[in-house]
Length: 100
Image (cartoon, rainbow, N blue to C red):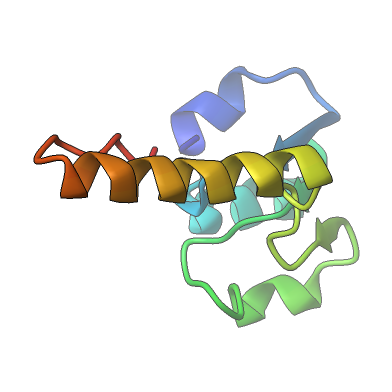
């Protein structure tokens, strides 16, 4: 999401990103929040991790989580089994699965 895409959103939209920090241009997000076009943002991931963007602390309409969107039992189990599958593939001379 960049400035041009934020401008396409309806007035008062809420942005939620729990995927990848690189998907949001953080400078453009702060600009659209300051202008009032976007009402709020919920962020679970950031361009710089850990820690996020210190400038976000100046906004009362940005809600931040410490990258815990994947913190479900099912997802963590799947992540562990993916790691085991990748080890099996590696030691069998095969290409491990993509991590994304």
